[in-house]
Image (cartoon, rainbow, N blue to C red; front, side):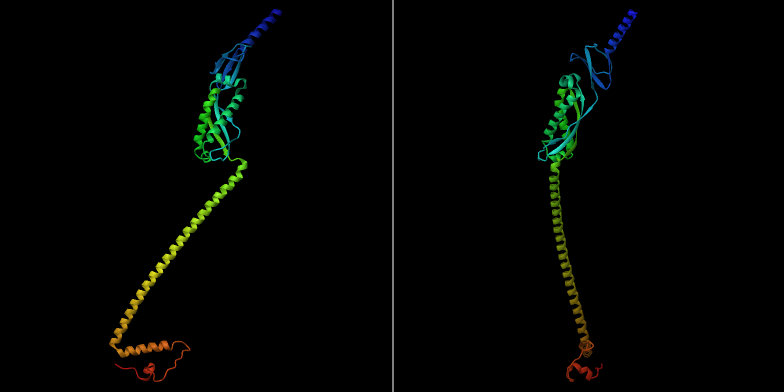
Length: 290
């Protein structure tokens, strides 16, 4: 009985030792085999692998692209308009041995802390070399690439490859918002005043042009009217002269009748002349015959 028990215990120990010497690497990760803290093996391909039980340990690292969001950071561009920047990065553990040597037992948390410092330094340096308008314009994409490339070089010492860097938010600090809005309002009001002044100037030019055109049109019309009136008077006088030449007595009679009509026009018109005056010759004598 004792012998059977010992055999079973031995088999169990052997099986436990065999199982503890094996480990499986997932396709989404890489593994390091450590012996007393020193790297003794690297397993990057998925599948079954072996280690020495009780002496060697396995440390696993994610082989996928990881995300890192940095804390809000204040930067000062060239125009001294401070901005609050939120960024995030995508990175991958490229060299697990170098990564282990760089961060030790701190692992990913320690690496991300150092990566954040690298990103913050690169962000300050790149954004501090341009004006705030460039950061808020289409140039932003090129600036993010510069930050990525600069941080990528420093991150290589950690065994990490920075894949991408993005600026999520670039806003003014809260204490500067009111002053900035006031300045923006003042600028818009100034632009509006300039537009109103230019509009008034244009309106004055249009009104002056219209007045001048009106004067020219009226003057031209009066000139033409005077010419037509003069031609009509000349034609009338010509007709009168022709008529007078044909029958002087009838012409005198006609002119006298017109004088009567004009002199006695109106309801209360009155005229005082001597009876033998020339004005009433046609009332005293009969109309001359042919």
